[in-house]
Every structure is written in structure tokens, then in C-alpha cells.
Length: 502
Image 1: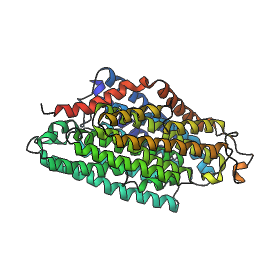
Image 2: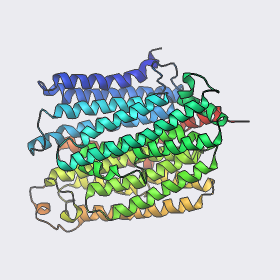
Image 3: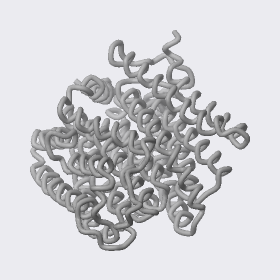
Image 4: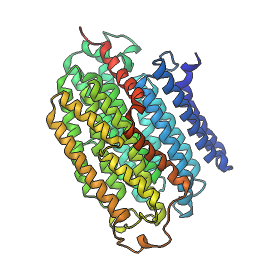
């Protein structure tokens, strides 16, 4: 019985932490940074308990407030909690540096850590709710929390990026709400009352409603959740928001925010795919376009953060494509790449933040060079993230991409497999080229050759080192996360099978 309250506790702990920060954080620093790191650590511990319970026993179904925890929920919740803990730990010194540079004030850090905890709470809610309306509300909550963090430095560029982010994502998510209302209206006669709004009921409802209604609902979900995920052509908010936010928030946006959009697509569009071949092909087309345009735009960037932002546009295509296949191998590969992308992209953004910390804010490739000798740990972490994203064995990105290519071949979508392979090669080339120019190339400006440049403090590089080790460990031993990936895949397919017509 106590286990059924685990999902509620995962939402409640960061909410309590945020209340402590907002009420007591102005007077006592311990109630600011201490509550943030304590809340993140306790949330991570609860996420581990939930993951262990789901893997060993099965889903948690009898939870209050329409909460539900299956393999997919446990996987994403664990991922979110680990990344949040690393980002909060990274922020302790990095945000103090922002204060020292006059970019913010000590009092405003109350808002920063309070919003981080609120973001963690709504992320947990989004991943643990079984109600489609509450999923929409939670996604909107993540948008509002991160929008205030994007413009945290309160400059013109940040405010513009935040405004664009809110305008585009909120508008896009309205389409997801339209899709939900459409499904609920069509399914009313087959599943009267609240059950039609439950995500676990989709598999039973979809075969009963007209084909035209289903396909229109899928289109609305792809537009709505695809906007949140940063999928082409709904990605216009992503490069500006990623580049103008403080480095920890850039990592948050790429590592977690766009993944909750992919999570929502997994809960909805993936269930439709096995019923309609057109959905599989359409998702493969739009995902392939995202891969191609994202990598081409990344090659054109001189700003490190914008370069990584466009790589997010490209890499999210792999995740959405796998989830759109609707097969075991496709969903497994999509979830595997979701985990891997979260790890190596968070690592890369935090590494860029370390470069900016050490060089006084420089982030243009043309202004940097030769940092490897003075920042060996940062150089190592960036290089691990770069080749992991490029899909080079034996790092984690290789295995998830290989799984996706096998899934595409299983469906005979060889054109999609070919595009994925070419984009992967271009990604590897782009990232290795960038790493070489920043860390081993010849310095091009005086700031980059300043003898005062040195490795960042341990509180900053420790989280980066943990992420780098995870990229290596999963690459060398991918079975490490197989139980959770298998449970997550089965939880999606189980919903579909519940409504399968013999």
C-alpha cells in the first residue's frame, strides 16, 4: 500500500523543496542551495525505488489522483531525477560565478532554485499521470517554469528567446489538446465517462473510432508534442532558447524538456502506429527531415550553444522515428536513444558551460582554441559526448542508433535507414571537428590564450565526469539498462495489445 504513494511522493518532494526555497531562501543560503540539492537527491532516491519496484514486480496502478507508474514512467522519471541532481550540483558554483560577474544577484538565486524544483515536480507529474488532460497541463507547466529560467539573466536576447519559446510551444500544445478533445468526443459512445481520457485506455478505444478521426488526432498530437520536442518544422524556439539560457538551463532544455515531448508522443502516436501504416511512413518522413535540416544547420554555426541546439533538432529525429515505428525493436531503439541523448547532450552543454566559465563567457568556435592543455577534464568530457552523439563504438550512441537502423530494416524502410546513417556520419564529423578546434586547434584570440585559464572547480566537472562515465559504461555494457528499456517498451506495446483486434 505504501508503494502506491511513491508517485505522489516523487511529485511532492520537489514541491516542498521549492516552498522552502521561496519562503526561507532569501534569509538563509542553506535553505536555498541546501533545499535544492536535498530535494533533488531525495527525488533521485525515490526514483530508484520506483524503478526497482516496476522492474521486479510490475506497474503501480492503484495510485491516487490518476497517477500511474509503468516501465516507461519509471525509465523517464529515473532519467529526469539523475539529470536534475547533476544540474543542481553543477549550478551551485556556476550560478555563484554568474553573481560574481554581475549577471545576476544573490537574491535572484532564490527564484532560480525554486523554479528548478517546480520544474522537477511538473516533469514528474507529466511522466506519472495517466490522464491525457493532466498530461497536457503538466507539459504547459514545464514550459512556464523553463521560460522564466531561459530569461533568467534578464537581458534583451534572453527575453526575446523566452517570449518566442512560450509563444510557439503554448500554441503548439493547443493542438495536442485539440487531439485529446477529439478522441474523447469520438470515444464517448464506446467508453463513457473518465476512462476515455486515460492513456492506458487508448489501445482499446483506437480500433473502435473512425479512421479519419484517428488520423486527424494523430496529426494534432504530432504538431503539439512535436513542437515541445523541437521536431522540424516546429523547432523555431529551440536554437534561441538553448543559446540564450544560462548553461545549466541549456542542458536542462536539451536533456529533459524536449524529451517530455518525445515521452508524450510515445504515449499517444506510438499506440496508433501499428493500426495505420500511413502513420509510420509520415513519422519517418518528418523525423528524417528533422535529422537532415538539423545537421546541416549545425554545420553552419560558429556559436557552440547554437551548434548543440541544432544537433538536438537532428537527434530528436532518431528518437521520434523509432517511437513512430510502433514495433518492439523500434520503440526499444527510440527509448534507448532517448536515454543516450539525454546523457551525452547534457554532458556537452555542461562542458560548454565549463568553457564559458573558464574563458570569461567565450563560446564562439572562432574565438577559442588550445584549451585542451589547460582544461583536460573538460576536453575529455566534451570529446566523449561528441563521439557518443556521433555514434562511434564502443560508446552508448552507437548501440541505440544500430537498434534504430535494424528496426527500420525490419519494416523495409531502407531510405530512412540510409538517411539515418548519413546523418550519423555528418554528426560525428561535425562534433570531432568542433572538439579539435576548441581544445586542440591553434588559439585565434588573446582571451583564449590567457595564461589565467585553468580547469573548472570540481563541483562543476564532477557532474560532467559522471555523465561521461555513464556514456562509456552503457556503451561497453548496454545490458546495464536493458531491464528498464524492456519494461518501458512492453508498457507501450501492452496498451496497443489491449485493443488489438483478433
